[in-house]
Figure 1 (cartoon, one colour):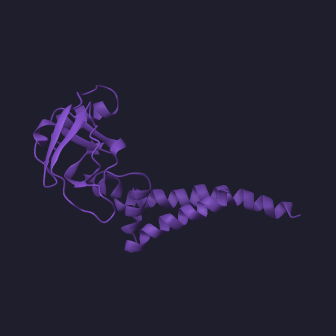
Figure 2 (cartoon, one colour; figure 1 turned 90 degrees about the vertical axis):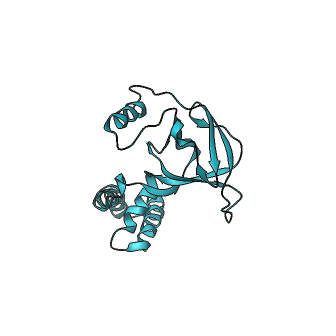
Figure 3 (cartoon, one colour; figure 1 turned 60 degrees about the horizontal axis):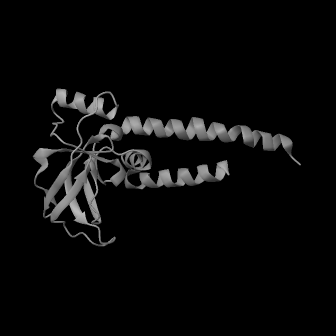
Length: 182
């Protein structure tokens, strides 16, 4: 019944979604500095890669080798063996480099994954083959690494004007985006 008003809404939707929401999010990410800092997070198994030599993040030569590996320019050997853990701490980390989310992982603590409320530290061996964890024991790896996607956006908004409530702006924005594109 109202083709003109429906047309105006149809024109405004991509403007609001693309120009305003994406631009504000990008500016918050860049101005907060969260995009290039390591944050404590739970590691996703699919983003873990273990290299068979120890590479130091503060050595430019090592950083370049890992960069080339991650960009498929020159592949590095992947670790096959066991990760030894005692009271949640990796004890044989001189034999490999632990990568998560395409970054050097630091301060890794290994927990038994026994549910939401459990935080029992793991002790034992974790089997690794070709850089991937193949052990079937349910474990949680928590440490510092780069993050991306929604968690990064939430961290960036937390540093802004709204403080700890900034992360909810991301959830509300995603909800509004879902309704506007439906």
